[in-house]
Amino acid sequence: MKRLLADQVQLTKYRAVRSQVFNLLQVQDFAGVQRLLSDTHLRQRCRERAHQLLARLFNIEVETHQIKTKLHEFASTADAVIDYLRNKVLTPYAPHFEISNEIATTADPVDLLLTIFDDRYHRKVRFEAKRKLVLMNLAGAIDQRERETDIESRFSSFLSFLNDFVWSPQMRIGEHRPAYLLSEHDPVDYRCTRVQVIDMDAANDLELAPGQRLTFVKRRLFRPGNKDIPVYVSVRKKDPPAKVLKLLRKNEKNPAVAVDDELGLMAVLDGRAEVTRFVEHLTKAAVRSGVLMTLEDISDTLSGGGYAAESTGSSSDTPMMKFFARLGDARVEFIIHTNQSYLDYHHRHGVSHDEYEVRRIFDSGVAEFLFPKDIYQLDMLDLRERQVARYRDHGA
Image (tube, rainbow, N blue to C red; front, side):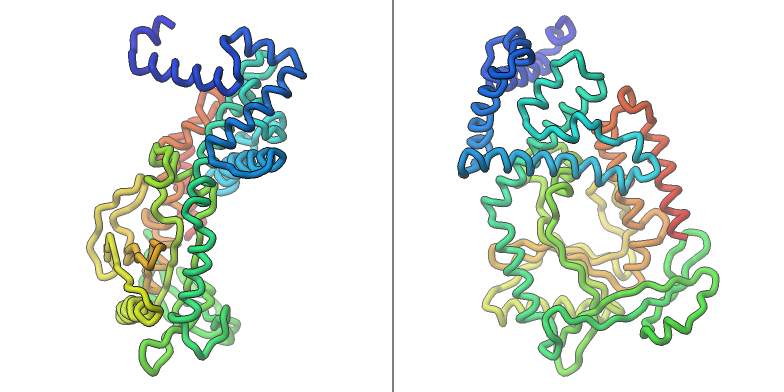
């Protein structure tokens, strides 16, 4: 308390959090919290009142029994954030970060909150209860934002636009042309030095030389004139766990401010000329659909040069074209590669997306925030270097 009183900002934050805890639990002091720990009937009544308060906080307009289901969804998203990091960025150390059984099986906010105040639980369990509440709060804000912006409907409309106006009418919806990228890579930093497209028959008969890779791509076709041009396309709607991580990286609680790339498309074309034709084809397709497409925040390093990397952990040497396309009520992030830059995006040291994923989780402070050293006994700076080296070894 002496330390809090010496720092007015921290004191104000402490009082705000304490007030929020007491209001949610509907108690007047910490003695009231202790009564909830020992009285199961009192705790059940507290849960019912808290569920109604949380439903109003996140604008959940459903029946009482459905509020509990919604809170369970938020808890599942919170667990999914930790599981994603364990299974991707922290794979070799996954057992160290496994969620305690007591927390993994608890989804009710009141039970999680009371766990923090229950001395019977180990310090790690109490920390994980607090962490899960923080992540559930972000998941609730994201769910509210998605309902308000009707993201599912906008994603469906974007897919319909692509199928109706962008892809070649000679192909059925969802039809692809399989191919392989045969690439050669520099032995030092594994940048792509040469790439050619080959068909499946040629790939089956091929014996790879040292430094060569074979990458499978399923390509669609678009027709800007009287000739079809192939393009590998990946369309995505950012899922709730990814949005939670982005809010943490940006140190932001409002998804409307921090998450500006809910809808995204990555396209890979044979060369620079095809990239230019694809962008022109997109804008003309939008006009044919009755909408004017505007391109915003354009950056282009496909022909060399660098860009001002704003995201923590990103490399200014990453070759790509990137922009946001405003299409009606949708704002879609486009990332466009040539075959060569796409392979660099996956394998080149210092540039690859796997390395970027590691750097941005560690350098933004998210790893230390979610897995503090005094709880998990692991040095995040050391883990960062080990994981970057691991991805470079796997890439080569």
